[in-house]
Amino acid sequence: MSLLLAILIGLILGFIGGGGSILAVPLLVYVLGVKPVEATAYSLFIVGIASLFGAHKHYKLGNIDFKIGMMFAIPSFIGVFASRRWVLPNIQNELFVFGDFVITKDLFLMVFFALIMLLASFSMLRERSISKQTKDNQQIKIIIDGLFVGLITGMVGAGGGFLIVPALVLLSRLEMKKAIGTSLMIISIKSLFGFLGEWGSEIDWQLLISFTSLAVIGIFFGVYFSKFFDGKRLKKSFGVFVLLTAVVIMLKEFFIF
Image (cartoon, rainbow, N blue to C red; front, side, top):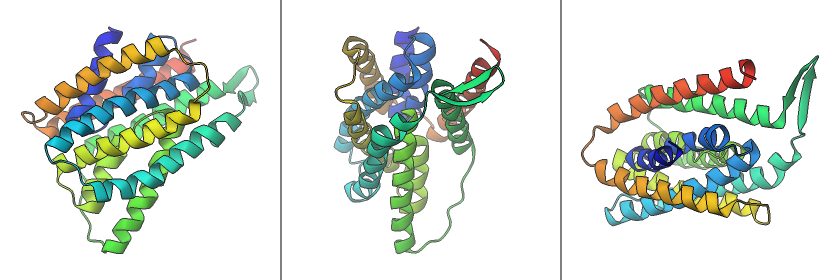
């Protein structure tokens, strides 16, 4: 089951330029028994490598805008590196105590991750209108969005494609296929840069390499089959799945012990 889900992560990344990585952390934590903090680090590597292969495929198809991609990527990998290097290590193991109920660092990360999943699902399910903006405002918003996505990526290990793709479409006026390809380039850069913050930590390389290899296989299929499927319908279906997964995580963390 875990092998199929690893392939599914790459498949979804290839289809819609994001979203698949949102499954990596729950899979690593609940199925493979990896601790949440380690799972967010592993997810950065898995998503970064898989997205790199996907970006290469999209590059050959002419679906990457490097200028806009780097405008988003530079503040993004600054955010993710800062988050992994300084923010996450300084979060205490026990944050709050309410009687017998203790909010630990692991619990906080999983609940925060579930909230990000809810945001992701709403982003995928909601139709966004395009507003008129000046070029300067667009560039400033892209930079701010890049920094924000980087911080979120560092905290929860998600690639952030569910935030990047809409931003590229709405702020940069990229067509959907170019937004997907550019998103994969951005995700690969910032995720791998964020993983560098874990260098020197104890890492289960055997698990990481085998899982990543399956995700890479999935992303090749995702990029190929994306030419034959309705992206909007697929995105909404996955949005529902992400929403349900977020609810399950909340229930598991608060009510199932």
